Image (tube, rainbow, N blue to C red; front, side, top):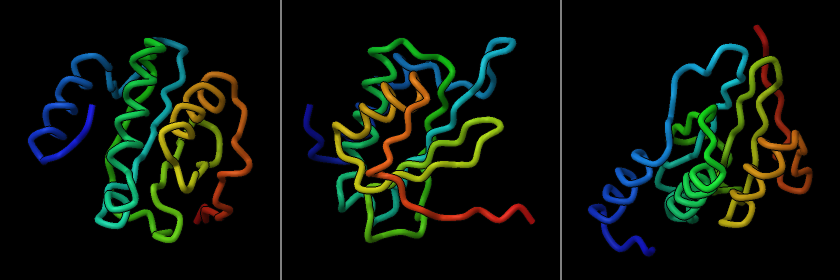
Length: 130
């Protein structure tokens, strides 16, 4: 499934949204993960569309409903695009860099499902709690 135009991207997005329940809230007692995908110009140029498509595909394959995928602008680390940030309730955000198709799938299968960080892909940053 290649993306050759904006219309292709819109079509793929709509198909994915039908398959994936990108919910604001979870079932009672269930954590909601937020996955932010950097979709600024630098991210798109580095392959963020493929990253986004892979995340949505893997979420759909795993039939996960406690994940909200959000396209965002620049996350500030252009040298490491495509970027994906995982926000999990009660934990510090984790920012992954150079996220290709396989790493996107690993984020779902290892980080989200097994609470296993992909140490070789984490961008070390600190978030101030001011």
